[in-house]
Structure formats: C-alpha cells, structure tokens
Image (cartoon, rainbow, N blue to C red; front, side, top):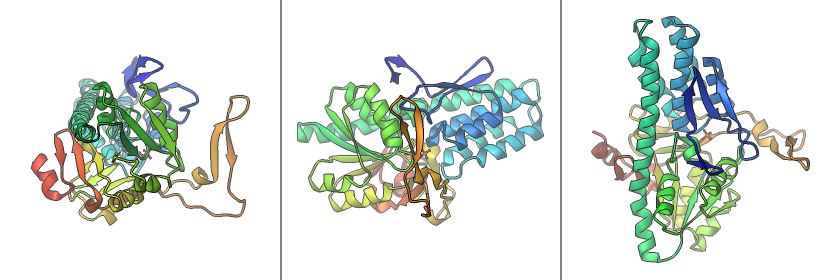
Amino acid sequence: MKIEGKEYRTIWFENNTVKIIDQTKLPHQFIIKDLKTVKDSINAIKIMEVRGAPLIGATAAYGLVLAILENNDQSFLKKSANDLINSRPTAINLKWAVDRMMKKLSGVNSNEILNIALNESKKICEEDVKFCENIGLNGLKIIEEIYNKKKDTVNILTHCNAGWLATINWGTATSPIYHAHKKKIPVHVWVDETRPRNQGANLTSYELNEEEISNTIIADNTGGILMQRGEVDMCIVGTDRTLANGDVCNKIGTYLKALAAKDNNVPFYVALPSSTIDWDIKNYKDIPIEERNSEELSHIEGLDENGNIKKVKIYPKKSKSMNLAFDITPAKYVTGLITEKGVCEASEKGLKDLFK
Ligand code: MRU
C-alpha cells in the first residue's frame, strides 16, 4: 500500500539485509531500518519496530535467513529459532513461521540451506499478501451488503492496527475496507486510539490517511455510545491467535468492544489468515497473554513544539500500573470470521468446514 504516494511492503530482503519500516517512529517519522543479524530481528519484534501477528511471523522467518548468513551452523540455527519464538508470546504466527522454516531447514546441507531459507521466507510473505487480499475480497461482500441496504456511508469501527502495517500488504481488518474504497463504496472508519501503544491512532489512522480513506480517531471508551447512537454499522478487528473453537485473542480492549456490539446488535467480525489459527490449544485460559512494561502506560510519546519526539510521564509518581497487552473475545460474541477461504461462523464446525 502507499506512503506519500509510493507503494511499499512492510518487509523485504535486499543485499543480505532485511528492510523494515520502523513502526515505533510512525506517524511522525518514516524510517526504513536495516536488520543485519538475528539479534536485530529479535529486538525489532520485542520493541515493536515490527508488530502485528503476520508481520512478526515474517520477520522471524527472515531472522533465520540472517542467522544462516551470520553462522551457517545447525546448533546456532536451533538456538536462533528458540530465541525468535520467545521474543513475543501471544501472536501464534511467530511460532507458526519459525516451525515452518525449521521443518525445511533442520539437517539441511550448509551449501543449500541459505537458498532454501530465503525461498521459504519469501513464500511466507507472498502467501500472506495473497491471503490478506482474499480476506479483503471476502469481507468486501459484507460491506457491500450493508451499503446496498443503507445506501449511505458504511461506518466501520476497528481496534488496534490490523492494517497493512501489521501484515506484509493489505492488512486483515483493513483489507475489506481498502477493497470497498477501490470499488467506490463510501466508507468511514472509527479508529480506536488503542492505549497504551496507540496503534490505532499512530498506525491505522496514518495508513488510512495515506490511502485517502475517511477516518476518525476515537478514545477507546467511545465505541459504546457510538453504537447506541446507531453510528457504527459493523466492527472488524484482527487477531493474534484464534482458537479452533472460534475464541479470539486480540489487542486488549477488543472484548469490551465485542460486548458493546452484542448489546447493540452491531455485527462484530474478526479478519484473519489461517496462519493465525491455533489448532492445538483447547481452552482460552491456556493462551499466553503478554504483560508489557508498565512504562507504556505511565509515559506517553509525541512531538514537542520543536517537532522532536519526546516522552513524558503522565501518572502520579507513586502509582503502580499494569499492562496486559491482549484479551479474549469468546466465540459467542463474534458474528463471523473473515478468512482467505471465505467467511465462517466462529466455531469449531465453521473453521473445520473451511480448513479441513
Ligand atoms: O501488540 P501488537 O501491536 O503486535 O498487536 C497487534 C494486534 O493486536 C492486531 O490487532 C492483531 O495482531 C492483528 S494483526 C493483523
């Protein structure tokens, strides 16, 4: 998708270097950063220079390419794979991508391994682009249906950033919106700010602006009253891990939005590629929920009057704070899952019928 009119992807490989867009600097600065070692990849995932389930999976895949370039040795590769998996706990795509790479790379001859690793990482990225595009085409039908009934702008609420910046291109939750916009269906997006890291304000609104899609940032607590006033036609969010029974783990605050949607009969959709499905965990209580540094709550970053990025403390000195990064929305609050294969009910049957 576009930034200042130029087409980008979120990650690519060039001259033995992985290139990423440093998301910690957006929307104030657009910086392309080089990752040269597996440690650089791990750090980029940990400090959220890259984030969003599909993108951290792709970064981990390329991280293994960098590991091979650094030290073409199976035990180093194994250790790197472990360190990558442990860099963030909740998004399943990370483990999915590393496991997929290691299946191809374990025990492979050192003369061939680099090419195999590079091809597989590229394949993971290309697949994600195709899957996200299909999610868009499948979700477009739902937006079209609402528009055909309403004959007026379709208002869509989203939480966090499940846009192209969280994937390789298109995004998951935003892909149906981009496709609707391309078809000239009038859409407007309510963008949850998404405290504490503000991925909604800093990333979703930014990328929608760059694609000239009408959007309005709202405080995280505003969605409920907008739904009561009939100003939200549908919600679409992404997910970091969806269980085979349809329970959805996503950015903290998603659950509360789903409850408000249920109470107001607003359809609540979750968009995801199949790489985000966890077929193993049976109970949502077993999903590892990331708890991040409480400084992400107590401090806030923005531009000062001289245009420099500045961090300031906003909480009382003596107050404690707690920063859980994800929550779970039970399947019963999800109207449907929008996947690359079609839209299904958020249930074991729904998912199994689509993905045998
Ligand atoms: O902590 P983040 O920014 O990595 O969390 C991202 C989200 O929760 C997204 O909504 C989710 O990953 C879906 S990404 C397509």
